[in-house]
Amino acid sequence: MTRSSDLPPDALHPDTLAVSHGYDPHRHHGAAKPPIYPSTTYMYRSASHAKDVHRAYFDGVPLPGGEEPGHIYSRLGHPNLDMVERRLAALDRAEDAAAFNSGMAAISAVMLSALRPGDAVVHGRPIYGGTDGLLTGLLAGFGVKSFGFGDGLDRDAVLSAARDAAAAGPLALIHLETPANPTGAVADIAMVASVAAEMGDRQGRRPLLVVDNTFLGPFLQCPLEHGADLTVTSLTKYAGGHSDLLAGGVSGARALVDPLKKLRTFLGTSLDPHVSATLLRSFETMGLRTARACANARAVADFLAAHPKVRSTSFLGHVDPESRAGAMLARQCAGTGSTFSFRLRGGEAEAFRMLDRLRVIRMAVSLGGTETLICHSATTTHYAVPRERREAGGVDDGTLRLSVGIEHPDDLVADLRQALEAA
Ligand SMILES: *Cc1c(COP(=O)(O)O)cnc(C)c1O
View 1: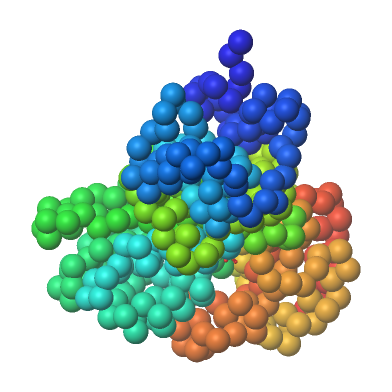
View 2: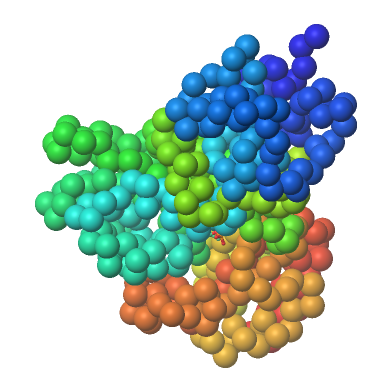
């Protein structure tokens, strides 16, 4: 009998993979749903079995008789982690994936693995605050230099930053976040991959191209299919989807992902069995949640864009399809997402008056949950960013970020309508 877990992932749609891929009930007493394995340690059948298991883990030597390697200690790996990683790899159309206990743990592992003192990094602007802090804090202290570019659709701008970086040290890594937070700035992954290839020819070493796919997630964008080497995702957001777990993932070729799994054992940032099980369940509804949140976001964004007190929105669904960004989005993305920002006419006072009147939409940072969340960027997510840099990045005192959830869209629009009366 052929079971879905035996079918090659390429043969199935993401919605199908998200429900059952990576879990085979027949290996778990027929349990229809995955059991949770809280055990921290795994027993050997004999002393020689112990040696075989360790040889398999450290040297990749297959176990006698084609037996599966099994587990040693849960920081190194456990059955629930395997299930999450197989499912994430299938969704990201990757050979392998590694799961971590937060998105930042995933990003840190990639950077600590790929970078050495003297190396240079190129990144799009703006980038996530945690990634920015890692580059300008810890890694700068280790002698890693970073260079930003503003327009991820402009090949000359990306190439010029890459050349500056390569002049300062070998360019080891290019980090993209597309779309970016909270401006919705987009980058052309295939174009940046061509810059990575060109830099590889020039310096004899191709920089690693890493894409942070948190804002769209695997249902709407597969960076690996456009030339990225690794996709990193904060699974805390749309994959977890209920604002009740922290997790991160990295997907790509096995040769790139395997060293990250080894590094994870030293950093101690593996995902624990209970959170793995919750995340695996959350994957099952990710397609439904993504579709509903995207439809809701369009309704909310259409309402906001037409409102006289709203200056502009960054909703990707409103990008002119004839523009460079619009043409690129049509090639690269299967949807326009559900987190975007909008700017009120006026500043902090107007924004605060409106926020304090909301009754359905809740005020908090983070995104990708079932509930709609809103925050005033300048005084929350971008609190520590100096005004000049913040405004250059498109965040002014009237900017509000909205992560649209799966509630009824009419209730969200009505809540915004009544709150905007106060703005
Ligand atoms: C939230 C976020 C992260 C960090 O993820 P955590 O799970 O909070 O560590 C990284 N990148 C982006 C774009 C994010 O939104």
